[in-house]
Image 1: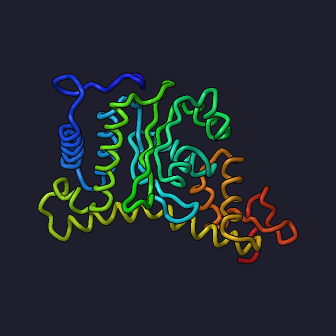
Image 2: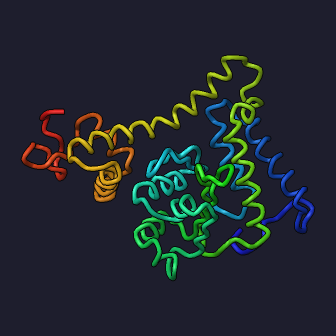
Image 3: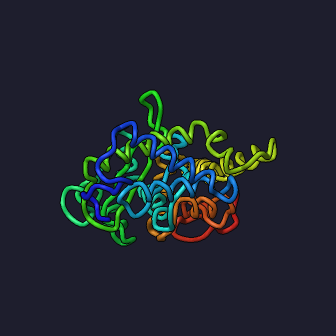
Length: 278
């Protein structure tokens, strides 16, 4: 179903706020219960978001501090690549929604104001088959801690009824993030401490990319004697130039396959690490 056409609700018509919120909550809860194991719950929630809205895919990203984000769940491979793209270029609707704490709706990434606002992101997103992106900030108390990102393979915005549903979905996802143990307990079953350990394991796995990027930023800071933002910019630039992700480049830095030291120290950023000092 293309954007700008209201999504189909059971029984037809536009639901009341109470009915809409109830359906969203029930759909996401059923998705969590239906997951094979706790490790599959985040993906199940993102897939459910797509079923509730006239979009092609979705992802949820959590901010790990200025410039650092982790992808919590994605509905499909393109959604995962799109989330990593925004992180790599450091720009796009997701970052704008985080910075502004308000929804950002990019209805046409092929031409017009959205392309002028995010030229690099728009070009790369279209290359992935993405034509529109809708980013909704996730958070409590007015502070954005992440975003729900929805994408469409067709140009067009969200019709008003679907934007309302998207905001209900965002609220439900926020609740799932803030109360993740409760949200996945039905899927984990009556496993006691073992179930809670499994739930914690996928949260820890999601945070792994944070740690790698933070550590790589620290190493680049030492290598180039720059501040954290400049170090992250260098990682992003290298990732973009190589057609890779920031996470992949960070792993190379940590494994010493790549160094950003000046050439005089044997670490020209244009070539692999030469085995020099720390």
